[in-house]
Structures are given as C-alpha cells and as structure tokens.
Amino acid sequence: MKKQWIGILITGLSLGTAWAIRGQFGHEQGAAWAGALGAFTLVLVSKRKDWYSKIFTIALASAVGWGAGGMISYGMVVGYGRSDNFPNALYGLLMLFVIGGLFGLLGGGLTGLTLESTGQKRVKWGRLISEMTAGGAIAYYFLVSQLEILMTPPRSEAWAIILGAGLAMIWYMVRNNFGSSLRVAMISCLGAGFGFTFGNFLQITGNVLGISFNMWNVMEYSIGFFGGISTAYGVFTSVWPEESIPAKRWENISAFLVVLILVPGIVFKESLRYSLMLEKIGEISSPERIALFSSIISGMILVASAGTAGYILQKARASVSRSQAMLLFIVYFTAYICISYIVSGAFAGRFMLNHHLYWANFIVIFLLLRIDFPAFKETGAYALDFKKWFLGALIVLAIIFLLTLIAVNIHGELGGSHDRFDLT
Image 1: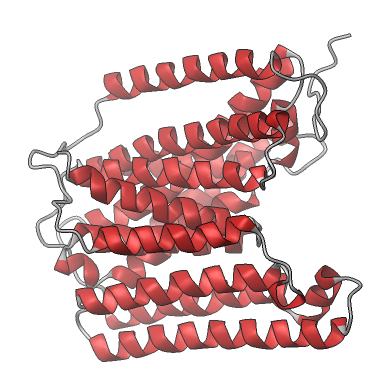
Image 2: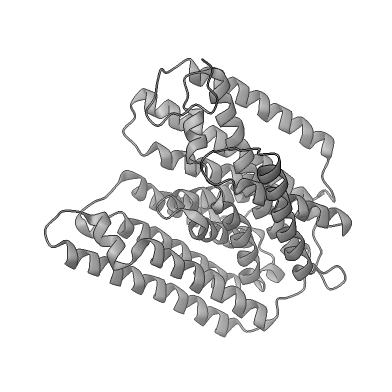
C-alpha cells in the first residue's frame, strides 16, 4: 500500500502543476488542458495496456469534466474568504468547497465512466450528455431564476449549471450501475473541494506573512493537487473491468482534434495572439517585435505538440504503447509550461519563481514515473461506502470551520476582500 501512494502522489503533482499553469490562461480552455494532463498521468500510472489504447478518449472525458467547471466565477468567493469577520469568511470558504467539489465531481466522474464503459455495459454518451445539459438548465432556472439563490452577485451564477449537470450524471450512474465511476466522482468531489478551500487559506496566510510569492498560484496548485490525489485514490482503489473496450479509430481522432487542436487553439486565441501579447508586454523597447515573436513561437510550440500527438496516433493505429503514451505526456506537459512562460512575458525579460517550480515538479513526476510500483489496490471496492464518505465530508467541514477561525484571527482588513452579507 505504501508504494501505491507513489502513483497517487504522481497524479496529484501532475494535476496540481497543470492547474497552477492554468492560472495563466483561466476559463474553460485552461482547465480542460489541465484535466487532460491529469488523465495522461493517470493512464501512465495505471500501466494498463488497454487504457493506453484509449488514452485520447480518457483525456477528452477528463478535459470536458474539469474544463466545464471553468465557467464558474469564483473571484468574488475568494474575496469573501478574505473577509475579517467570521460569517462572511466562513461563507467564502464553504462556497469554495462547493465550487472545487463541482470541478472534481465532473472531472472524476466523466473520467471514471470512460474507464468503466465496456461492450456489455457501455456508457450511452449521447443520452448522458443530453441528461446533463437538461439537468444544468433546470437547476439554473430553478435555483437562480426562480428561488434567486445567488452565490456571487453580480457575477455569473454558472455554478448552478454545473451542479445540475453533476446531479444528472450521478443519477445516470446510479440507474445504470456504474458503481466505480460514482465512487471516483464522489471522492474526487471531496478532495477538490477541500483543496480549493485549503488553497484559499494558504493564500491568506501567505499574504499576512508577507511571503514574496504568487499566492494565488498556491491556491490553484492546491485544488489541482488534492483533486488529483483524490481522483487517483478513487481510481486505484476501485474495481474496473478486466478488459475495457478499445476506442474506435474515429473516437481517437475526434478526441485528438478536441484535446490537441481545439483546446490549445482556444488558449492561443484567448491569451497568446499578437494583440493580446502586445497589451501584456506593455511599455518596453520594441514591444511590437517582442509581441509578434512571442505569438509566433507559442504558435509553433502548439503546432509541434499537435503534430507529435498526431504522429503518435497515426503510428499507434490500434494500440498505444507505454513509450508512446509517455512521449505524448511529455510533449503536452512541456508545451503547457513553455507557453506559460511566454504568456507572462518571457521574451520581454519577465520571469517568475513559480514558473521555474513548474519544471521542478515536472522533473520529479518524470523521475517517479520511472519507479516500479503497483498502481491498484489488491482488493478494490465495487461501490462507494456512503457512511465513510459522509464521515469524511463532516471532517472536512469541521476543518473548514477551524481554518476560518484561524484566518479571521490572524489578519485585519485585507486587499481584495468582500462581504457577502452586511452585518451592520
């Protein structure tokens, strides 16, 4: 069991690093890229040949699940957590737990469904997506439009859409007996929720102590790390079909187009194109030349990573080997790190410590992947133990209550703080 934690730690480090990088890009596309990287790592850690063959579709499911949560607005909620009074600070930390939990619920759940789908018990993706879409629309209309339950006024209340989609996914899992997928979804929900809350507490503590570091990035790393280890724990302690059905050729191609072409393309459009780079670089010598060079190089990196992945897909045909999966992981990960440097103004001479730490994490992950360790627990669980999960949720809530008490007593008014409720 001790060695099994190596694989769980690797997944946490990978998704944590990717989520921290996601902070440079934000929104759904950044979260989708991070989610895909988490899936690549999960497959590598598993060492299951049948999972290698569907690595593109697993990455797509993870990218959609983690990426969908990117539509949730949480800037105001982070501010509530920084409040100097207990009710507002507790509200902020609890809502971050909810938001992080929704990220993990969909990210872990859709990944699990891809792993559990077999010829005898196949996930009907068209029906599932339709039900999740309807669930999101109904939840938003009922909770926000009718009951006017607002988490972050006047910001977007898209959390209700993700909540409705998540509940519809859970109902689909229960009806169709996808027990392992449900277990992963719920454990991932708990882990990512705690990670977001704990990350905000770390951010507050770092600001109070005057630590000269990007503490917002620490918060992002926290949700990715805890979301990653909880997802990995759920996967590697659950029971899965001995032989999952291989992805069809068109499925792999479709997943490749979304994960390696569409997502990076949106990242480029929203963060790396010339006009945006010119704004980010600001007033320095020859900003136009540096902005153009930054856009060109980042575009070349994205094309090269897509080209490499396309070559792997073409070469693999029916099955992807471990070495090919490893190459895909390395290329996709290093591309994400490189463009995070560029978007922050590397060619204008701007470098930040957190970017160098991305490389340190990547090296540790790469070295750990070379260690021989068992990924799966010998006696896995077939279903979620709701009593244990509920007890875990109560423990997390108690910890959040304690963190709030500590936070409001170590600082006065902080910059960027907000009050959700007027207590005067």
